[in-house]
Image 1 (cartoon, rainbow, N blue to C red):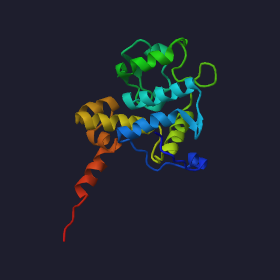
Image 2: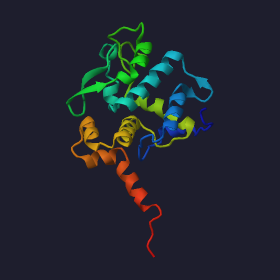
Image 3: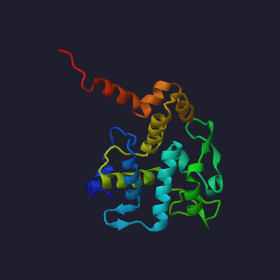
Image 4: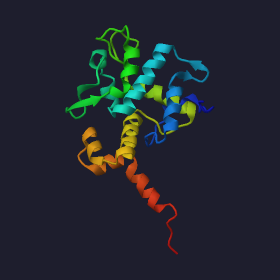
Length: 205
């Protein structure tokens, strides 16, 4: 069940000082449910809800930047286990595994033109904007009381849970195209978490 929580709508305009990963699977599930609702008590149309949930699932399962995520077309992913993308920020090629979302992608893209953007906006053959993607996530986060969510939260959530499961920062560094493992650890919030864990209960004198 979605937690009954709502901050004022003006929260959308407030700057998030520190975007964080979603650290628990429970909060991930809460976000999925909340994304289906545009505002409290008003459910989105089914196709829009499915689009927005798929965007979130793609973000947290691939670690792609939102700017790259929104450029994906249906033909890039339909019927595939992986696809190759040239990342906008680094200009590097990356093969992205999407086998875990094959069912969701097939269901969402059924009957849609393959030349359409996967996350199409209201304008003909245009994707939603990064601002709109941010609003989708913030509305859901406000609904369940998470105040640290931004578009980078999807990428950070992927990294956080990948590291927690496999404990291999080298692989994650390569996926993210970071220049050093320390950058990756800071980015996904692991380094600060580890520091905090060493200090909890630590006292001298």
